[in-house]
Amino acid sequence: MEFGLIEAIRARTGAGRRDVVLGIGDDAALLDVPAGQQLVACTDTLVEGVHFLRGTAPEDLGWKSLAVNLSDLAAMGAQPAWAMLALTLPAADADFVEGFATGFAELARARDVALVGGDTTQGPLTITVTALGCVPHGAALTRAGARIGHDVFVTGTLGDAAGALRKMLVRDDVPAALRARLDRPEPRVRAGLALRSLASACIDVSDGLAADLGHACTASGVGAELELGALPLSADLCAAFDGETCRGFALAGGDDYELCFTAPESSADAILAACANVNLRVTRIGRVVAGSGVRVLDAAGRVVDVPHAGWEHFAP
Amino acid sequence: MEFGLIEAIRARTGAGRRDVVLGIGDDAALLDVPAGQQLVACTDTLVEGVHFLRGTAPEDLGWKSLAVNLSDLAAMGAQPAWAMLALTLPAADADFVEGFATGFAELARARDVALVGGDTTQGPLTITVTALGCVPHGAALTRAGARIGHDVFVTGTLGDAAGALRKMLVRDDVPAALRARLDRPEPRVRAGLALRSLASACIDVSDGLAADLGHACTASGVGAELELGALPLSADLCAAFDGETCRGFALAGGDDYELCFTAPESSADAILAACANVNLRVTRIGRVVAGSGVRVLDAAGRVVDVPHAGWEHFAP
Image 1 (cartoon, one colour):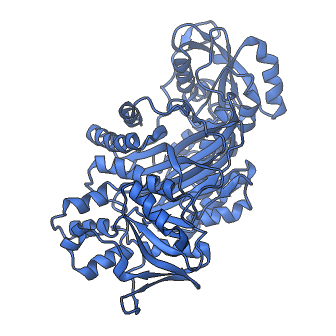
Image 2 (cartoon, rainbow over the protein chains, first blue to last red; image 1 turned 90 degrees about the vertical axis):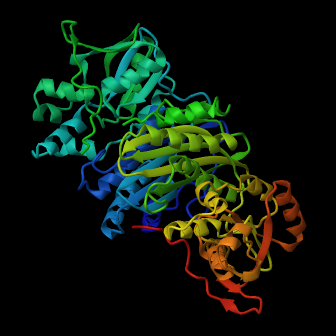
Image 3 (tube, each protein chain N blue to C red; image 1 turned 90 degrees about the horizontal axis):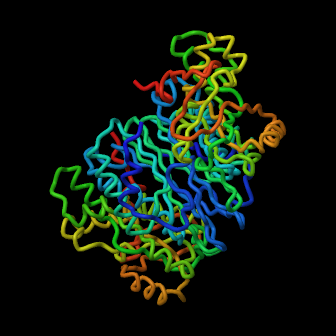
């Protein structure tokens, strides 16, 4: 089954990249990885009713399906280059295809990503994107480099997407700024590039800060302590919910797509400068400690419970 | 949702490849593309009820979801290296996961492919595999190099998978050899490698010979004439169906995963030797002509209708 989707995206993304020797239209794409660079590859699936609500605008799905993958590349310090798209659709739906192509292409153009392959099939709405990028040999950020005494940082603000989702689920008005965080996440690619030589470990926040930082701690063989009062909250989130709810979203809400990373204290000034340079807020939120797991401390140093562990999908 | 699938496959595929700097377990995989090589990338989705019948053994699905992608790499003359798997499953089903992992890992091991990423989600059964491989700079086979006067070849035999599917759909006994062609296709990777310097254009037969050769003709700006009597048919297929039905399957049945390719007459001997060297039958089935499209000629030189254009999915 062919919906014209791949062609529609190609038409909207222009001539593409010079490192695409052969793009869509052959059995496979043929790509030039620059000399001295390593390939970085990730894949993520979005399923209707699990990762997004039925009725989500196709433009937003197109954007987000690429964004969540570019966010993974960002967390590796990689420069995104190419993407492949597998879309399963219940039926040919010209409006959906048009909208999806528009949203996907909008982000692809903005980040200079070429769509180089794809497959459209008939079935229940499911979107799988594979993103490919490059990083200079040995320069990739991983989850495994956090060391005791390092600081923990996070970019941007946390909990906005979870706040939007909560408002939608209770059928309340959703502030536009929160909704944009849920529907149109901005992958922190430039920050990831800037942090390559500065961060000791890095992960993107997709399942929730506590859960994702926990993954990095496990990979690094350390623990972490977070300061509840230090979590960066947006003015929009604070205007929509009480403080405790906001902090709960910040700790455990999903879909933030910020970068959480660790670094030695000596890098702090350079980190602030690097993030300022890409116009992105960055906040020190805790430190790496011996042991395992993530503890959250209030102003008095008491341990606070994380509301729930990680992103609870809004599954049927 | 995590089914343990990715871990189960990793456990079955062993230590993996030395060019996997970082595999499963970080935000993305980190891979070393050898110097002087280009990256080859493809993705394909299998949906229950569209690409395979409900009730297909999970072992076979695991194998086939990788095989169809390796077949695309083979058609480019690429050496498969890495794969990523996105599996959407209705519910945690330990038997399914175990079976799927076994089949996927069996082919991955046999072809030295490392699973380097994946995503398991809850939803209607859908499998998307992305395969990555490498080819020396400039050596890739494409669909676009067929020239007037070149011969048309195909590897192996055609129509076996379509014969198996027909038997299943009419609830007849399915000869084991035909069933194996449908459920466990062998990607023609070694043939693809051997044909790099010999073939002028190459495509894998997934939608049906006439349809796929038609794609190569379009990409090359030429037409092709096939000799009906030359189509290679297996003894198993001929034992199960009359000759006309067999030839119909060979022309228009899908899921063959043979390589169809063109080459100048001067390469014929080398092609026979190369395929013999990888223990694969190869047959000259026609020639490239001026014009466009694929015509099929009987022994008297009369044009024969292709039964139907391409693989009709057995959709609900």
